[in-house]
Length: 343
Image (cartoon, rainbow, N blue to C red):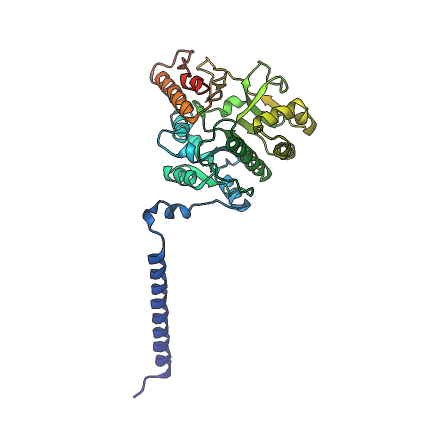
């Protein structure tokens, strides 16, 4: 007796499904065998890479931002991230050891200029990383140490201004911090930002004691806060466009030239200079341990010198924290390596 027609159709369907399943297993197995080995240090990170296109930048920025649309941004290349104990490690150590700073790490976006820096960032774990798309000018290798005022250094500074302008246009406000800025305590309350009155809060190399004197203070672009609005977006557009007529000048010098010519006033950008008693630099140390929030290795030429002297700063800050913490005087070690770096 032959099987009923319905049963024969059911069996045929079962055999077809089995054949499809076997084919899929063969295809998947072939793909896995032909894929790069997981041990090559690159495969795992590919699944987390956000390294091209405006949509990817927006996703990276959104992931790091607070609910109010503000985040912390820093930029690195392979030389900054290459070895244990380098600037990237010191920067993150300062945030993990500082007073009230560890919770800020979740809102830091580390922007890598090259693939090795991105992979090192990813391997650290617990930090947000984004790889900047390749430049269109064909001169894109900025992975090695770029000495102060070298051609590569200047190009790297301008690339970050373009990036930060893009962040503003996405509608996000940010604190930009160089990696050679150590965060000894949470600087956010010390910014004393007045949202209805201010667009830009920026550090200086030599503070004259008058925060409203934009023209009279020499601005430093290693640490600043920018609110996202039409005024600041226009400022960053004009700032980056000035690159074409400012050969041999770094972005900081161009901004100082623009503010002397009244560009900030013309664009309606409301700016305030940060007090070096709270936002200190090697050019002008703060001596008040109760006030200082960040320390910047400005006035320092080489990365080796920055690493040596900033490690000494973190050690001094740690000694104070491990003590009674009562002394108002934070005794900085001499910045001997930074001084030597100019010889």
